Image (cartoon, rainbow, N blue to C red):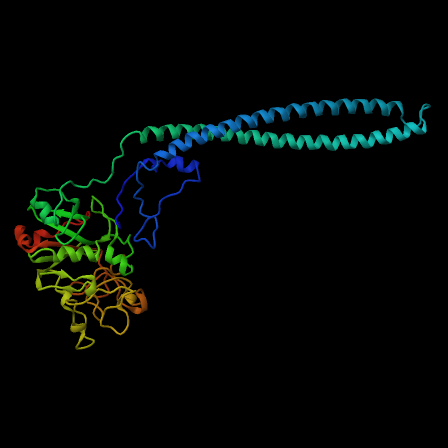
Length: 441
């Protein structure tokens, strides 16, 4: 499943992660082939409850080993003290012997000289042995400090393990709330009584399994199924064919994240009903201005047809009809070769456009490319809006573009693509359907 929810489990305790380096994190990401854990959405519980038992067992074994080490250290200390006593005794004996047989005395005999020399050599060995003992004592002290530190860590570990055991004894709760009502799409969910925007499971008529979507439900009882969201550039939209087919990014209950729902899901949502579907596109620029465009009888074909985009006609809006192409003034065929109606979907690894090259490869994203575009909502995220040919790949206008509002060298700040049955679109009037984006109003 491509979507990851914010599920905080028992292993979310950061203190525990600082204490043990052997724990591993489940990686996850956009698809099976390439997964990276960078979203901060947490892990699942109670899979880590077994970790608590392991920690407690590990603590018992380690505690026994620490006690054995302490006993060994005590034995070493006793041996060291005995060796020091022997060294002192030998030194005192040698001092007395040297005074008794010092050169120049009347009792000085050749055998005694030999004995003194041997004794001096022995004393030198003893002094070296004493230095060795001192060095060993320092090492023992360092080891004792290390043991004390480990004992403190083990005590902390035991405390955390008990806390973890207590937490895992309670039923785990998802931090993300999925609404209980289900339907064929978000309008069906709203028809069944849902009044709150959030995460819902839907199952179009042709689908075998339900899947998660973000439903935007307004005060008029209209339920929009959101299929794309750009907000802050946190999600890279340079993805391959499989990722665009399955979907990528993250769904969130507070609608603060970026995502592409997935071409296969969009295909099912737009072809499972006899009722015409309207695609509403909502745009926000970097000055906080908002525009929208509606397209009636919107459909996405099957994968066999490369998820071809078709629509009946431009239904209205104040953003202009960029899907119909645009005359840039460089060639009489500009408008024809930048229209999007009837275009197949292209990615860098699946070139289905009308260009001799690969538009998706140059643009760095997936889209219904012609040769190449007048609208491109999956483009590169440029902060501030304005960008130049030097910023784009190979001098290409690869930003988030809607040329009937801003020029091709202006990248929009936020975009939304969402679906609703035609019969419900005008329930609250055309302009009331434009959502007030994150903090702008």
